[in-house]
Every structure is written in C-alpha cells, then in structure tokens.
Length: 208
Length: 170
Ligand code: HEM
Image (tube, rainbow over all chains, first blue to last red; front, side, top):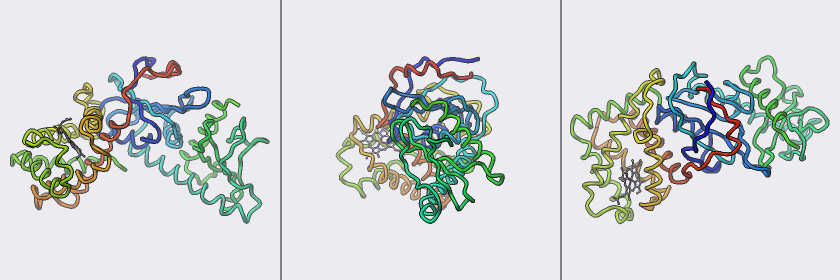
C-alpha cells in the first residue's frame, strides 16, 4: 500500500536547532510510535525535500534520498545539512522488514562520515606539495560537483594514490557534502555505495 | 551514541523499582528540589511557594518516563500509542511549556540534571553504581534535549506543496 502524506507535520525544527542524527536518536529512544522525518532545504526557488527517514521503536523502516533508498540512503542522509526538519507521526501499520536498528545504521553512517572527513582534512595538507587542485568549498553555479567532466570540483589526493576527492555545496550556498574517492576494493561496500548514491542523487537534483 | 541500550534501560528500571517499592518517589523528588535550591537559590522564585504539588508532578513524570521506556528492542513492532501517551511527544509539549510559561532557559537544564543525579545518589546509596549513574545521565540527556527541542520547534503547519511527491509505503 502506498499513501501520500496529507497531514501537517507534528512539528518543524530549524536545521540550526536540530540535526537529523540527534532527532532520530531522541525519537527512537523515547517512543515506539512510527515517525517520518523529512529533510528540507530552502533554496532560492523554494523549499526542496532532500530526503526522508522513517523509524519505529529503534528500527529504521525506510529511507530515501531522491530515488535512492535503503541503507545507503541512511548514510547519505547523514551527510545532508537541511535548513529544516519536518516530523510526522504516522498511523501504525504492519511494518515489513526494517533496514536495521538505528544504532547499527548510525554507527555505519558514522564510519562513512569519518572516512569522508579524513579525506577532507587530508586533501588541503597534501594538496600543497602535490600536483593537485586546492580543495575549495566553492562550486561555480550550474556545475555538478560530483561530475568528472570539465566542470568538476575534483582534487587529487596523493595520500590515496591519486584517487579523486570531491567537495559539494548546496544550491543554497552551504557546503554540505564531501564525497569520496572512487571506490577502492578495500573500501567498505556501504561507504562506496553511499558515495555513489550521493553522486547519482546530485546529478538528478541539480538544476543549473 | 545518545541512545540507551537494553542493558542501560534495565539498570534504570532496577533503580526505579527500588524507588517505587520503598515509596521513595516523593522523597527523591523532594531531595532533588532541596539540592537544586541549595545550589541555585536564584531558581526558587520561578517555582510556586508551596512545592508539594510540584514534587508530586515531577515524581509522576519520572514514573511515566521510566515506564514508557520499559521495552526491549526486540519488541519494536508493538507499543504504538496516541500522542498524549507518547513520551517523546509529551516531553516536547512539556519543554514548550517550560520555555513559554515558566521562563526556563536552556542553561538551567544542566543544574537540574545534576540535582536529579544527586537525589538518586542520596536515595539509592549503594544501588546507585557508576553504571546506574551513567544510564541515568543518558536518560536525563535525552529528556532534556527533547524538552529543549520542544522549546525551539514550531508546531506543525500545512505540509510543503512538494509533499505531494512524498510517498510512504504502508
Ligand atoms: C528533565 C527535566 C524536567 C522535568 C521532567 C520537569 C518536569 C516538570 C513538571 C511535570 C512540571 C509540572 C507542570 C507541567 O507539566 O508543565 C514542571 C513545572 C515546572 N518546572 Fe520543570 N521539569 C524539568 C526541568 C526543569 C528545569 C530545567 C527547570 C528550570 C529551573 C524547571 C522549572 C519548572 C518550573 C518553574 C515549573 C512551573 C512550576 C509552577 O509554576 O507550577 N523544570 N516541571
């Protein structure tokens, strides 16, 4: 069964007051009700839904970022810095198999975030001494920062044998995603998949 | 991780069972307010002159919170309740009242948490081990953060127009 959300949110919170990671944990700790959290970015042309996560009783039931779903969407959601969160209390329904426990998915997501952050930190330091572009948070308008064409925002990371690192910025002007090098065989599959998911998502939602 | 695991929930339940059986609930909350006003006399004027009702209300709230959290992760499919009985929703509303009606500031949550731990320590003695303290500290953190979220968040309005593309598998 598929249902459209027609009810008003239970509440909305500004991104500066609450982040997705914390809200998921608060709700999952204190409630066994079914909640949907939606991540909104207020860009020039109006609010955009970045993605959503549905939880119940400490389990993640579903998540999506654009058309990307599943565990990778959970990791990707943690990279996003929405300007607003909307929370909906949903009527309970016979839940299918969950994606996993909130704890497990958040811990995996944290590993992904750590790896991305270490790349971000390593890049400027190594960039100076290496034949690499400097990492800059500025993405020229109209360019997909996950692209590898002429408009790319790619830096070479010699610490990782020249694998590319990519930095992105939201259309609202805030840097919110630092993407990773091309997946290497030893890299965890979830981590690589999250990056691919973000890249695919960006390509879809980017409106020059 | 902010979340309590099943072991930590169990530790809180153990302590609270003792508090309930020994009819210590109001004694503990009385100790709590004594400690709070000893440490922060400037908070006293925010509260009513007669604290008896207040002590009872806090005890009832803590009792409700501990009971609402008494479930194991494996029982996640059950336990759906309406929002008046949902601890998360109740705390959001309570946080909003605290900010708007009682003038409570975010920086007052720290001293209140410290006074609560102190009262549990005095009331429970040896039963309040470092592991129990850690679990209660986490629980208080969850409660305080949810109340503070209630204070700053806006009640729901109409959903975004773009919500029409939102689909929920039920
Ligand atoms: C975990 C945190 C807290 C809990 C569970 C809690 C619980 C309660 C409850 C159950 C009430 C009764 C009225 C109502 O439900 O709105 C109340 C009232 C009140 N609380 Fe709290 N509270 C907490 C934190 C604080 C903090 C940090 C302060 C600041 C000093 C505070 C100050 C007050 C005041 C001034 C009242 C109103 C008393 C009156 O005029 O009747 N509370 N609290």
